[in-house]
Image 1 (spheres, rainbow, N blue to C red):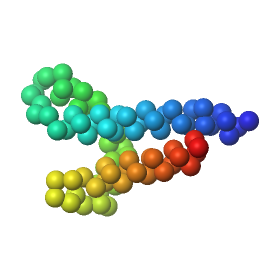
Image 2: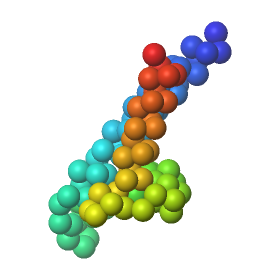
Image 3: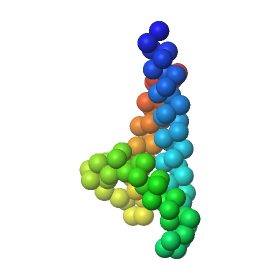
Length: 86
């Protein structure tokens, strides 16, 4: 009973967090003018995801232009979601 309750809450949260991470990644590809809507969205997405990305970024250095910490986090979320949500 408790396992299904955890799945009912945790699985959608993992999915939403993954989507927010991808939105942050896609938004980082576009130039952002100060004070624009995109800058505000970038700040909000940063606030929602920095708690998970920044600790990994301190450990895992970027490789060229690629932020490997982001990739490690996304793959970790995919593995966690497939293990918990079946």
